[in-house]
Image 1 (tube, one colour):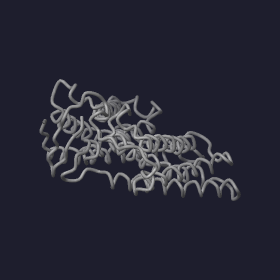
Image 2 (cartoon, one colour):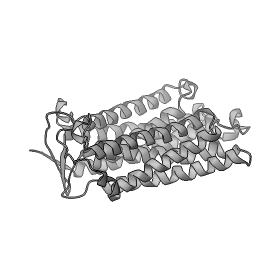
Image 3 (cartoon, one colour):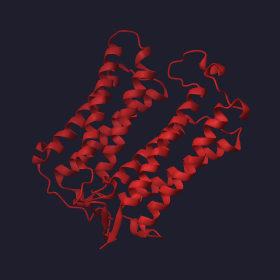
Image 4 (cartoon, helix red, strand yellow):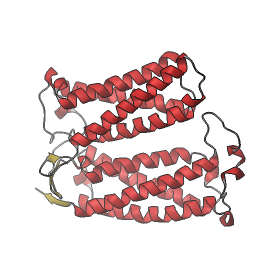
Length: 322
């Protein structure tokens, strides 16, 4: 469902099928010479160079290395698809809403590359001995940072502005949905070990909170990407407002319970990192349980702030169906 953003007013219209309501740009090689086209070429080049440098020397190991390689390969592939679609003028035939897809992907790609730019050097590069592999890994990190900046720049260029006809995902609440789901995925990665939460019902509740809020935010994103917002049994604005409010309330409980039961000795937690025997030695590619608990606590706070901002911005939007 395409939307028109006018100051804080969003006007929704229905379209017969996914992507058909989006403006179609006739394909032309000149699209690559426009600022956005050149920016996407930079994204394509930087991600390609990043994974090529690492692959040429086999400089990745473990889950963190696999994540970094996946990030660069995935971003390269999707950016290439976007360039081909725009070059050939196939936006109207694309299965997803073209008003929402490019900026949604650019926001995710910026976050993916940011995570890879942090995770790869801290969990892998610093443990490499000086030599060709280390040099390639450092260069790959630099190109990953360039890709992150390029994707973030695309988001800044294409986000919704007053008076523009655009998709919901280009608005601040739409971009916050991307951040919320991404942070939730990082949380899931840190709590992949069930022993971190299965011993306490309060901690299991926190995991349920992360899951419920992630699913709701993901549904909102998918509805917009598929132009299916009119399929909801309630109005889309009501769904968004209820989602944001419910998520704030749920995360408010998690921000209290997770640190309390993970770091309070009275509730069976470990207040000091030195008490965790797994953190006593420095292992490559390994994050000890105490560090995982701390990371989840910080990410919970970040997502709570994101949902609060989402609630505030959503309340300021006015949806008018035409």
